[in-house]
Length: 239
Image (tube, rainbow, N blue to C red; front, side):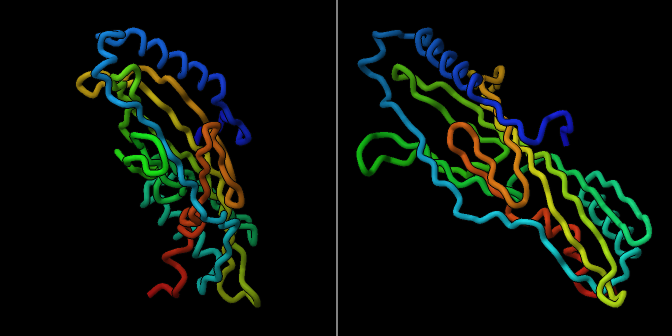
């Protein structure tokens, strides 16, 4: 997880101005100029449907295994999934911190995006995709010509797990809470599908009980999967 970013950081408004200026410049330099406008492709747009999911908040699970045994095996389980894990065992104070980086789809819900053409109450849907996808290739129509765009989304997350003895020292009580950092970038795509420099970059952060809001309106919320993941294989006694 990128620890250099302040979890409260939200950037993007200056970058959006740069993106708008860059696309305007591209429109003036597209081949054909005004002469191509007569046979121009109609402009397109994007419609966004936010998720109606509620933030899961911190999670708590009861596990019928001793807390000390659980700490070691839970850490091994998360490492097998490719996560970086730090663990602390100080008697009854047992903590595990796991870091995830990569595809957001399993762990956050960001709603749906539709690329449409036409105006009025029933625009024609050209493309529809989940806003949490790690990579989406789309385009804007400028002066009748398509400008290819690459939209990317990356998740860096940290989940903190507390493990304490259960009531009357029977089993263990597991609590987990996560922090999510989403980075969204937009790049120009050139002929042959080659991506150019990033035109827009924005970062948002939120917790298990919060919502991440990007400047252009995209809203993201945790699915609860990351909070549940550490204790998932241990909810029944080991065989």
